[in-house]
Image 1 (tube, one colour):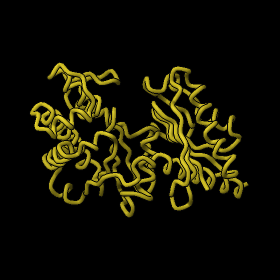
Image 2 (image 1 turned 90 degrees about the vertical axis):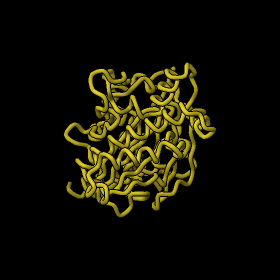
Image 3 (image 1 turned 135 degrees about the horizontal axis):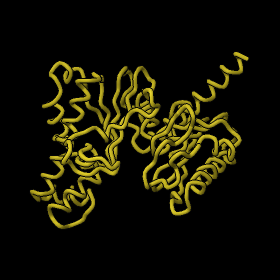
Amino acid sequence: MLIGVDIGGTKIAAGVVDADGRVLERIQASTPVTRGAEAIVTTAAELVQGLLRLHGPVSAVGVGSAGQVDHESGIVVDANENLPGFRGLPLRERLEELLQLPVAVENDVKAAALAEAQLGAGRGVRQMLLVMVGTGIGGALVLDGKVYRGASGVAGELGHLLFRPEQGRLCPCGRRGCIEGYASGRAIMEIYAEESGRSIDVATIAKRARDGETLAREVLTQAGRALGLTLGGLVNTLGPEAIVLGGGVLQVEELYLPALEYGLQMQALPVMRRSCTVRRMELVHDAVLIGASLLAKERTEDGRRGQAAD
């Protein structure tokens, strides 16, 4: 039995996961963002402790957290306003103090990518690129079943690839022209509001598109095509066997996904495009929990190897 934790800006979830990657029990709580980082960490620890009381001890706990996470140190290098006080937080150290257990910490998208690569849409694929499109855009590259973290330890910031230079839209990162400013859920809502004068959510924009509204259809189509063009460049550069798509925005697939495929087709070289399939996530809402549990398993195995070496 393993325990995985998913720390996000609105909720924290913890789950018991079996050896086959099935979530046997899942509990969650609202993220206490107004009370700061310590309250968020404490809430995560309390959820794990609740599962431990019901299901017995485990050898390690895995955590997938929003923000840029250094897996080696367990420190949240950077985080946006959704997790106040998380920038520079030694998350692994704090959770190990509270739980008295070994803890593995990773970025939530990377945790999800690990799960999809080993147990989901990326099974049997040697090179897989996971793309998560929600409020923002996240990415992770998996090579031979291992998450690629790069020299910085936090590689995978796909949402901040440049799409429109210099005079582009302002991104939450402070720069202009990032693809996140054109193809994310936040961007879709902002662009629609600018063009229509009405502030509505993505689901409502999608409904208007289904009902035939021209503006809604154009906004979704342009967003999908923008991401497709960006992914086409990555396909040319990285040559993945599969792109796995996930996130809330992809629920409006009728227009967004065909436009994404079109942009990808336009940008990717034919030989590269033919060798790369586009797939939907299979594990969906449980992907971070399952990936976090796999990290816990790695932590346990690393500990055993260390003991054997001693």
